Image 1 (tube, one colour):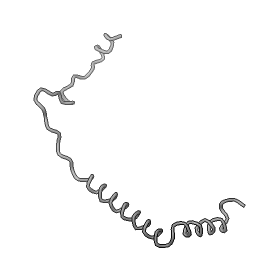
Image 2 (cartoon, one colour):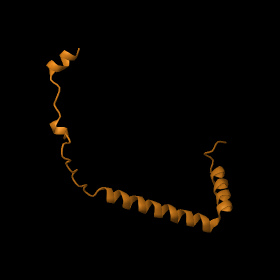
Image 3 (cartoon, rainbow, N blue to C red):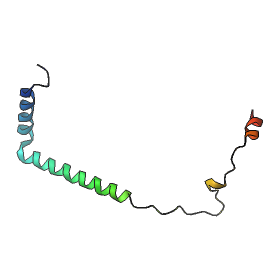
Image 4 (cartoon, one colour):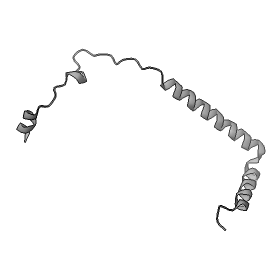
Length: 77
C-alpha cells in the first residue's frame, strides 16, 4: 500500500479540510487565483516595448568597439 491508494488521498483530503475548513480553503484558492491574475497582468506589462537606451557623451557603443584581428590574437601569444 503506497501513496497511490485512493484511500490515502481521501484521508489526506479530509484532514486538510478539517485543518483549514471549507471557508478557509475556498479563500486560499481565491487568493491563489488573484495571484495568478496579477502575475499574468505583470507579464503582459513586460511585453510593452522598452525605450531605446540613451547615448551618453563620451561613452562607447558596442558597435564602436574594435574587433580583434587574427594578427592581433597571434601577437598576444
